[in-house]
Image (cartoon, rainbow over all chains, first blue to last red; front, side, top):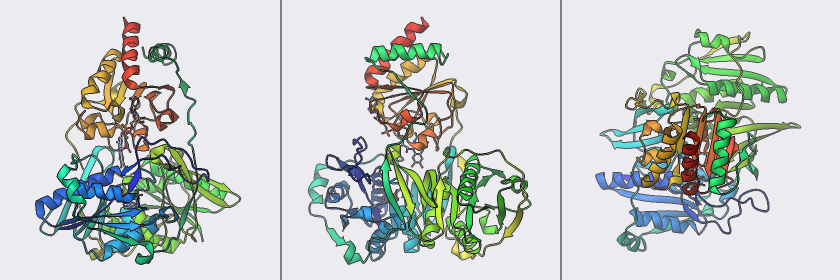
Length: 256
Length: 326
Ligand SMILES: Cc1cc2nc3c(=O)[nH]c(=O)nc-3n(C[C@H](O)[C@H](O)[C@H](O)COP(=O)(O)OP(=O)(O)OC[C@H]3O[C@@H](n4cnc5c(N)ncnc54)[C@H](O)[C@@H]3O)c2cc1C
Ligand SMILES: Nc1ncnc2c1ncn2[C@@H]1O[C@H](COP(=O)(O)O)[C@@H](O)[C@H]1O
């Protein structure tokens, strides 16, 4: 099975969020980056499928130079090779535009299966995979927890709301967006890290792919959210704050 | 005739709450833009649910009927909605942001050469210009978006972001719309929905919940919050990553894919407050958040907040509760 995995590099989960001078995104100067959480699970599912059925895992990532580090991490974990869509102005593309970039790089690979994360931790669009499937003309399913190979294609487990689930069968090639948390992620071994250095990373630019930055929706500015409730913040040492809270729970909330 | 079209979702014959919220969002938008409001729902027009859709402001109601729509598939729903949009020619198409909408609305938008403005929390109209707010960085920031393409503009609204109104009888005509869907264009075969193993704890009936998130760092630290829960006479609940990791059983998960709770007191410990968690506990009577990050979104819904290291605050709180109870 030939499997492509779309991997996005995003700011570290605990990164301090500061709005940049233009008010259009966050300041990135002192931010650390990592692999998007659900993409790490997509990669893990791909590696498990390859280990069970043979084939190849190719990771695809669009972003600037620094994305190379996340690509290396994926290769160190066991991906066979990578395509880096070298693109400094990803912010100039909307979801359709970046899906066009990914689609252009993926089309010639003729994969059996394409996996993406369920949603990115920065933009949180939760759309790129579904758009990609439509652009490539292949069936998709989202919020996937488990993938089984069948004689005719795939049988997947999809998460529904409120603790419900559903099985779905579909032919390949297909695209699945993977939900976080269903498997244990492997670590890169020392050997893996060493091997990653020799693996192929093909770089392509948006010009080479022939996908110009165009937008049908634009992010005009970013702002800090406002509180929906007036929160009473309880200050002091941990003991003082705790005593204050107990007092509130007794007198105002009346649960103690 | 252009206007606002709201595509609704019903489960077991009843309109979901978030669908009513989408109607409210659509009605407000239509009023601001001085245009019409249409509704669309999959199902037979004879369904009694249709009679209570909307109220006086609704212009037309479309009943989407086709055997291939009986069970959801992205292919059939995309085809049906695309044909309805071609017929109605709306300026705006609104959806409730459900798991089903997440699965097909981006595909529908792509087919129309558009991008869905997904999971929107607010819609503002100012001198004819419409902007949409959606959350970034799991709720730590808001992004203000604007559509830059010609109509239609596709939007899905977040659960709880707009206030639903009570069902109202409608005077609008109910029009049956029969899309053409070729059987071989539907590529997936969906199975029947099922539930995981039976629940043994009923979080919904607990009056106090101590809920723990990834801030707890390690399974070995769970007893710390268990002690607090015991002191308070509370049940232990958790955010999703805690249950995914197997540190607590899945039946204790609160949120969109877990349980919905509304206790007297919900104490969130080391939980950031992502929307998928908030939808499961926002209705609690009193919310207390303990988090080391003063900007954590959980504080936006909290009645009381303590900014601090849970490894210091929780033992202090457990001691203070024990003292108060002694
Ligand atoms: C389709 C879908 C469905 C989902 N369903 C659910 C669901 O049902 N339930 C759910 O909970 N999530 C769900 N999620 C996941 C959700 O988006 C969040 O990822 C999740 O809720 C985050 O959990 P958390 O707050 O525990 O972890 P994090 O977001 O990692 O937050 C940890 C928090 O702990 C704080 N912290 C760290 N150390 C300390 C310390 N020493 N003292 C105090 N505070 C500390 C940090 O400041 C941070 O705010 C779903 C996601 C998707 C996409
Ligand atoms: N720049 C990118 N490079 C590679 N994959 C991406 C990129 N942007 C989005 N994706 C993939 O699409 C998924 C959903 O992203 P989003 O639609 O932004 O929530 C991510 O989890 C990735 O798998």
